[in-house]
Image 1 (cartoon, rainbow, N blue to C red):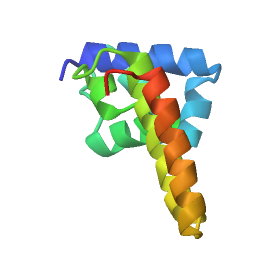
Image 2: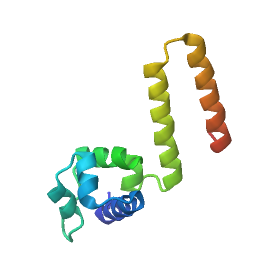
Image 3: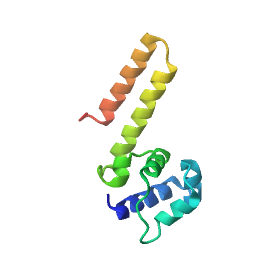
Image 4: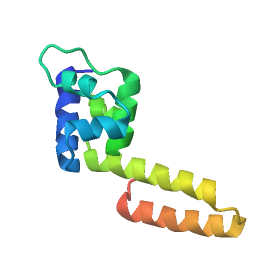
Length: 116
């Protein structure tokens, strides 16, 4: 993974979120000094567990941060749909209601991402 790409994407996403690096670090559970060091020249790439925390905090995937996927909107949609599916499975007990909600979610997915 190219460290420069990871850091560029992290910086842009943090700015888009309207939070400081310190706030981002607190939300992601990463030491603020560690986050600051990522943006200094010559610093090694972030640890994988920190990339996972960063991706979750910024609602993207590690694949997006590392450049394996380039479509930010697509990765945000995937994360959002994944969260919705988990929440449906965790909270809805009634089988018919769960089926109806999953069907509605699939309709939304197909209207937003028709190639899936």
